[in-house]
Image (cartoon, rainbow, N blue to C red; front, side, top):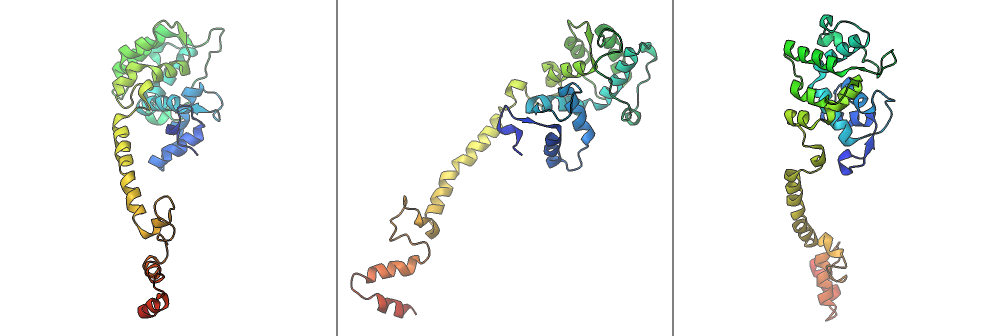
Length: 247
């Protein structure tokens, strides 16, 4: 499997991204990876391919705001069914794990819920609870000019919002995702050592067999000392005596 950082156009499945996460944390929960994938795929088939940047920013939202999103799912589901938002029961972290994420659209003719009412519920949610949630002002900004929205449409808006990403401070802007000056400097430092490594290798007897570096006769890789003495002895015909004296 090719690492996603090697190409901006790399597309991997949810299972492949989970394998990458397991390289960092062997027991990383599959559920978090699945939820992040549903944000990108809009709850579509889970075996679809996703770009690295899309998955990474969706994963960031799911990772940092997991409990908040479970509560948002409950609020959205109740709004979709016509319940009074003031009587919404926010699930705990344990009960939220067993609650099904809401579908994309509602049962009526209109898809999703009213954005303004949805935001009011989210604003009250952020005021009542102390766990991590995106700044309400940025959430409101993400919902600007939207009359109705679906649950996964809302999550996608959060993952793509530049201000929310900057508020978290964990990832650069999407355009700079593959640009890391510190890493570039480290790579340049390592590459600068390559010529020294090459010179040290070519100076060894094993590397003298390279025809571009040394003549074939002098550069025998197996018996450099004996071979050099034989070459000297060939000029006066004393090769056998030299070998006997060494034995």
